[in-house]
Image (cartoon, rainbow, N blue to C red; front, side, top):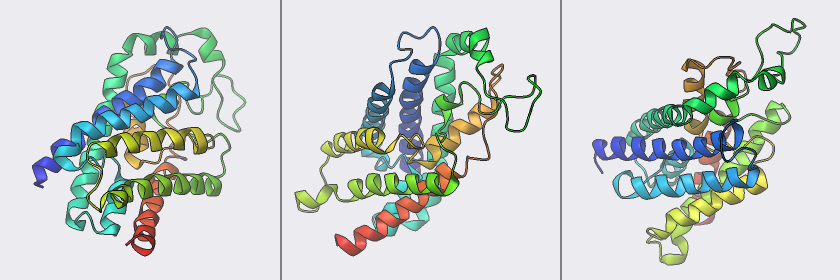
Length: 263
């Protein structure tokens, strides 16, 4: 696999992953969207199909990691060369940012309607400790379209949740070939992974929104901070390390556990 294969596959695959995943969050969140208030089940299945589409697009080109936690787990397991890891990670981050920009372009009118709506603005939270109602809001009313956030802000708990969920994801990916003589499951692997992502969202996504992918959170969060969105609020950088560190730890643990238990 050449460097250009890795760059092209991971950039395009991750961009589509974030476009469809962020797109379902926008569809459910934004006013004047036909899917407004469709709910958590729609979001989890939307992200599952996003993974499925990205994986099929990139699978034959780069292996469709689409996630630094998966790349790290494969490197620890031995299936990916450590020298290729930086290119995988950089391509994934670029793709995630491109995908987030495409979500904004797709829902441009809905973003404008949502962020200028008096009811939405009146409901924005104010940063802790601020009494001036004109103060800048905390996490903005559309940040959840771009990145994750905890329901209860407890960094230890939040990191552990992301670690556990990511171990499940990466271990499921690494073990897919065990029931097929070690040859992998081919195109079926993308479908299995998609259902695993749906299962994680339904079962483990409640506490933190299940980033389980550092660039899925970091890339769109960077885009959120840069886009000219009125009244968008904070990008919540104080939390941004959690959905990066937690999944990376989880990916490394999954790679090590696979080597110990399944090889």
